[in-house]
Amino acid sequence: MLLIRWLSSEIRIFAYFHNLILLFCFFGIGLGCALADKKSYFMISFAVLSLLVSVLSLGPLLGLFSFQKISSYLSYGSNFVVWYNSAQGWAGTSLLSFLLGLGLLLFCMLCITLFFVPFGQRIGRLLNEHNRPLSGYFVNLLGSLFGILLFFGVSYFSLPPYLWFALGGIGLVPLLFERRWQALIGVALVFGCVFLLFKDYHSKNWTLWSPYQKLTIIPRAVEVNNRSVPDGYVIWVNSVRYMMITDYSAQFKQRYPILFPRDIVPYDHYNIAYRFMKEPGDVLILGAGAGNDTAGALRNGARSVDAVELDPKIIEIGERLHPEAPYKSPRVHVAVDDARSFIRKTSHRYDLVVLGLLDSHALSSSYSNVRLDNYVYTLESFREIKRLLKPNGVVVLVFAVADEFIGARFQQLLTQVFEHPPVEFQVHSGFRGWGGYGFVTGNEKVIKESLSRDPHLQSIVQGSQGFLHSWSSYKIDLTTDDWPYLYLRDKTIPNLYYFVFFLLALFSYIGIKKVTGKTYQNEWHFLFLGAGFLLLEVQSISKSALLFGGDLDCQCTGDWRHSHDVAFGELPL
Picture 1 (cartoon, one colour):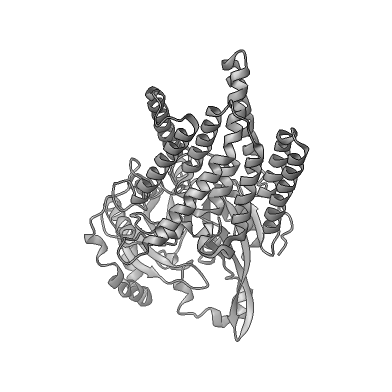
Picture 2 (picture 1 turned 120 degrees about the horizontal axis):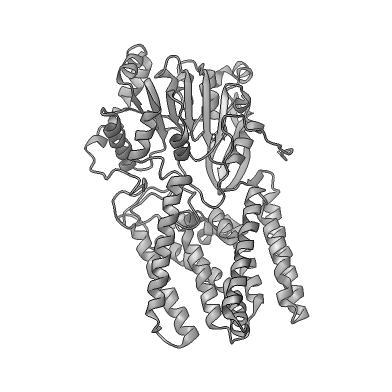
């Protein structure tokens, strides 16, 4: 579990193949069980883990062979969107880059397999030697459950990886006691890994591990009259720029008015929603993040704001660092919950519903490829959002549309649910926000009146039509709860998955042949029982994600009608 959590945070492609790590963990254990009568070498596990930690710590120094580049390499030939890399065809792209990506992925899978082989050997040997194998297996299951409880504790208390490796590594050192020199080398390797991870964790930037992801907070600055002026923070999620904390405070605007031109600021990322709602009363923000959207609602006169954010640590960061302190306002109620789960449970009605940049390309369940936001952008979800609106209510959705088929899907989803096309416009990026594309729907009369009384808003909408006019004629399948894959263009298995399936089959064939000397096994019923069990488990997890929320590793909820009070340590910034 810890290996999956660590690797999927450091190598972004595993956000799309979470269960691939799990499969190779079991593959290594399976090969080990088949080699139970052979001598086991736990030093292999220590060496492989040290190699992985070293390679990931070196990062950009490896150049073309950096593991962090696997995502961009494998985006070639994909027919789905890999974050920061749009879906691409083969024409004009590098086949060599794609093959290099597959090679690096295969190397990583080989390391994971080799790490678990000695453990599989120990498990197989213990089961063989036990006079009651089923009782032995029962003890094994109890150990697994105890391990999951430990994993829950690690996630709940947001412990960093250097502590995982320190505790886990020291716990494994006794397996090397047969030879003193191996134990000494094992201890040295553990401390080497801990040092590299500790060094990364305690760099000039502040890093913490939430129950869901790795968060790195970096101070940022803007240039004003050839002088660097501190202006909030950038939050990286799993080593990718993800969100900003922006300073719109009255003091900052008064000190640097040049940064806030009056004809632009009211229409930028965090203010434009309120040009469509003159007097926002009750506002719902889905994907509230560190507080920019919430601060925007308060600045524009919202009477009450319900801010929904899945990750409690991001809420804590906003409470601690946001210059406008939106989460400390008595008008704000924070819900630490999955967005789809919240809109199903709440009985409140809203004048304005804002869906911020609520996209989790880098986040999914550890057991299936259901991403945390998959069930937010479906036909059924938008119908539930429509149910939450007051008679004059409006919905504003802003999204980083990486490919035109995603924009077309949003347009057609909203048109079908609200029975009229949404108003669409481009939100320009800048130091005050990422930008993207905006979609406004709901009460058609309210939206038209907003446009008619605001010529500048009207010009923004009209000026964006050149980008968006083709979306209405785009042939696209709509996302539903039965098929919630927003980032897939068509109802098909992505091309990249076929390559990974091929690698998995090839890897398995070679491994089994090397271990057993046979090209196949006769126990086909075990193959089909395993495949059936895996399909049943993934289906159950996907349904549970819809019922309970997006993440099943550690579902953290709170009393959303109260401000989220947290104890927060000093930040080494």
